Length: 76
Image 1 (spheres, one colour):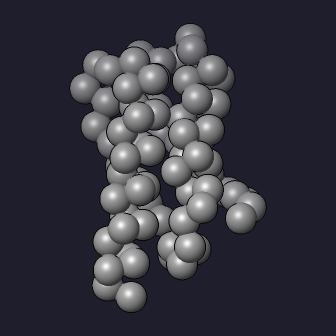
Image 2 (image 1 turned 60 degrees about the vertical axis):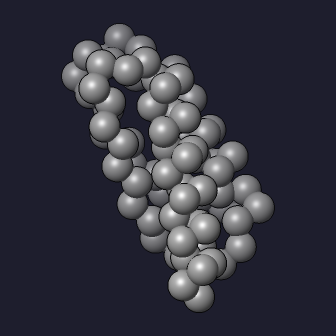
């Protein structure tokens, strides 16, 4: 699977660490997508930051993508 486009909207407070935080979140998304079969080509993941660090946000992204993949497999 190739990720052709990923849009990350980070909170303003992460401006100084946007490069590293964005990379961490994107890698978590790639790990979550790896090995998932039959997931839609277009997915949207929204995770509330609520003052959390990039590591916590990336864990939330990972969990949400995996949850969506499980839900799609059950429906399909």
